[in-house]
Length: 94
Image 1 (cartoon, one colour):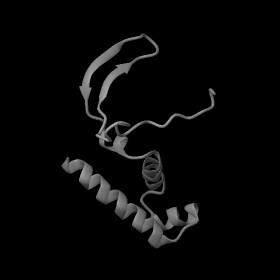
Image 2 (cartoon, helix red, strand yellow):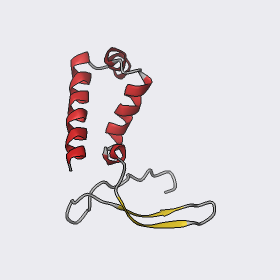
Image 3 (cartoon, one colour):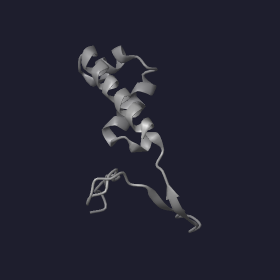
Image 4 (cartoon, one colour):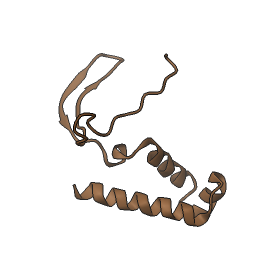
């Protein structure tokens, strides 16, 4: 059971509204911070989208290199990036 990777929830399981952060906890000194905080923009992306962003930065923004390392076509990588740009734009407007 300890090897199961939990997914960070982005939406309420009951109503699908955006979740907010309400408590932060330091495992080292047991300090707690409570309140209502919005998640950072990139934390609102799925794990797969976040991985894409990391790969994009590691590839110095080269979609050609990303296509090669991902084993998919350049247009497919371009479409993934365009979809991500559109999603980020929508998130910023909310």
